[in-house]
Length: 475
Image (cartoon, rainbow, N blue to C red; front, top):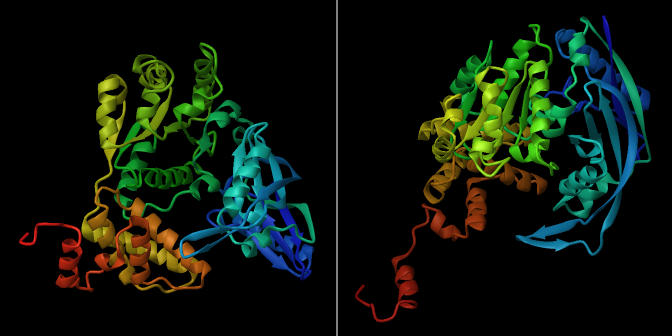
């Protein structure tokens, strides 16, 4: 039997009720939604959190243990400026407001540092010396574009304090999980299996076949994989879903570390390196730590690592990684568009040849409709509304006709997310007319041109061109 400890932030509101929020930046218990309780007393609120954690480990005996070894509560003052938005116009508040932000600062057994601001739903990992600046950055981004009424929710509560709850797990955690040190890796990369990382991306709707194929490639000894698809086609979402399935399989094996997949960029690897050989030394340490945890290094862009690190591809980051990958000492996953893949083959063909290329095919029209229908279903559940199903067809028609070079489903899905977020604040259920209005405001095209059901009178067309074209009456 293993005892786990979790930090819990508790605060009292003006109505003398208590809210308790579990601080779980690594996602050991929290999966997709925060674990929060609300009660008349602080004791009851914390007790509810503890009951949930015990239930979680009872239902999932092989769930991973938390790695937080210590936590403390710190406060920072952040200046923000609320603003009103009306008819597409922005009216900023007359002066800045200073928010006293409470942060839970956590230290993990693997050397990583993380921070959480539960009252704002903010969680992130950081390195030494970055906390103050990152708190300011994320808080200002969280309240950006919000009216004073919304910002007022983040004013300091009547009382706030940090508690610790304990929970029992039916199994002991693996010792290597606690002792594996990935300090150098954590400075330049992020673990892709964490709840914080996954929350940035939506599920890969309509990509089940691609996910299954990628899981097969990553299971067992694994192989170097290059995901190829247009921007917005869902490459990272497919990778995250495959990682979730692979890491779930790993929990029943003897893997040495539950966070095996780490994403980085070439710019992060060379950041702060001023002298000859510095970034190479850092990368050697990263490779060693990835190897120790039987991990996989994931790059956002294959082309970037071929163009970063030196004056050309022959002394780039990719060229440095080449011998390690050839000897099987390092596994890589990278992403690229078809155009980038062609360019990379010209720059360093021997490096590209080390990857198994996995293309993401374009969606057919029925598949695209099914994907948007699933997105709409998720948004209906999230916002507790029942939007008009005609939204799906209208959204697809507009993007396919007027934005044919934008990849699907990224642009269209993002469009629907933004539409629901905007109208939900106004208490309005979205309709197909709202889709047209939003598309019109973003594209600059008149709404009457976008609505096929509204015929455009020939007399108006004639009048429009006659007033602007001189001497071409017959044309």
